[in-house]
Amino acid sequence: MTKVVKFGGSSLASAEQFKKVGDIIRAEDSRRYVVPSAPGKRYSADTKVTDMLYACYDLAAKGRNFDEEFDLIKDRYYGIINDLGLKLSLEDEFTTIKACFIGKAGRDYAASRGEYLNGIVLAKYLGYEFVDAADVIFFNDSGVFDAERTNEVLSSRLAGIERAVVPGFYGSMPNDTIKTFSRGGSDVTGSIVAAAVSADLYENWTDVSGFLIADPRIIDSPLPITTITYKELRELSYMGATVLHEDAIFPVRKAGIPINIKNTNAPLDHGTMIVESTCQKPPFTITGIAGKKGFTVINIEKDMMNSELGFGRKVLEVFEKNGISFEHMPSGIDTMSVIVHQAEFEPKEQEILSGLHRNVHPDSIEIESDLALIAVVGRAMKSNRGTAGRIFSALAHAHVNVKMIDQGSSELNIIVGVEEKDFDAAVKSIYEIFVIHQL
Ligand code: ASP
Image (tube, rainbow, N blue to C red; front, side):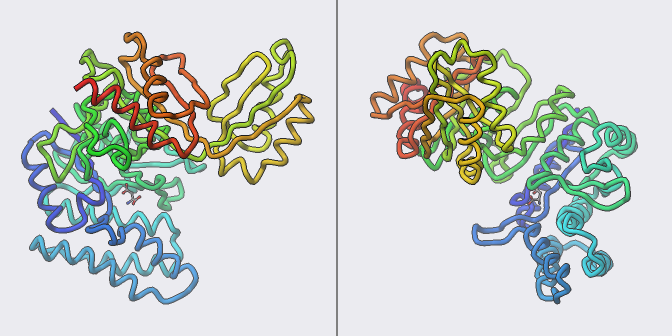
């Protein structure tokens, strides 16, 4: 059995956290390949090393002195090294990094050093081999991740190594410069490594015990999701759940490897298993509820719209030309609504309105802002009658006015649009009817 284990920034923020990580890894022989993030926050007002590196590099790029900021970064690493009692000097590394900052090696290079150095420290602490991600993770000339080349080089390199640490977040470009994934990208590296070694499981260790059924800022101590399918997760993450980087799903999913989200601070908790499919009966009809505020709906009305060929295309063309993607598009016989992100739409509002008038000559256009969308997701919805009915009676009881309804054809989700002011009440009422009343 082989597991790839990825540890997030808060799991490696201090020597105390490193010790927990060491205990977790040593507890199972199968935890052979480890992907670390850079040291994260030790307490809520703390700064992540990645952010310190960006700030430091920004000074360097302007030709300003950054000694003080750089020393603070050194302190973070030496604090960990000394508290762990390791015999390790990073002086040569720091000298090189400083010179590269002065030589303007790039923001990505700067940020990547957080993972690079933490990888060296962790490898030393565990007695594992350090494999620099720059030698095994590749991007193409356009800066797009090169899955084929990476998989080839990474799998043959790791085939010869029993236990290794591969730092997360970065790789190299064909011209040997460093490139990073987007923020939170160590999750992606973990997934790539898991696929390359054909792992049995990809464990993603963080500071929460997996996904929760609903947002804990709205629901008091929501229950955790024990098992979720990749498809369900897509529907939820798309609405704003942030435990796992979105791009981390693809490599493992393609290789048929499940992901287990685990908590470094509560390692015995089950966490959330993310799987392709499962015969396990979910405890509730719904798997999760996620929502987001900040949407605008553009209602377009025109008599006989339903028989006008190409109407929908002409409407969407206006949005496309203005670089706006739409979220949903519910329609009636003579009406069509397009739901978009308010922040993206606002600056282009007048261009879009005049474009719509020109393209489809509507009878009227009405705009409503401050809409929230709530996705109610669950693989069990398909086989349970009355799910939509229960959602709407719960919302009615909570005095929430439903502005829009959309059920995906997969019957995996029902999306409801409500006014932003009703958002919390809506989520609470849905959680209550499906979870609390079901306990
Ligand atoms: N250290 C990087 C960040 O803060 C990448 C990661 O932690 O996954 O975004």
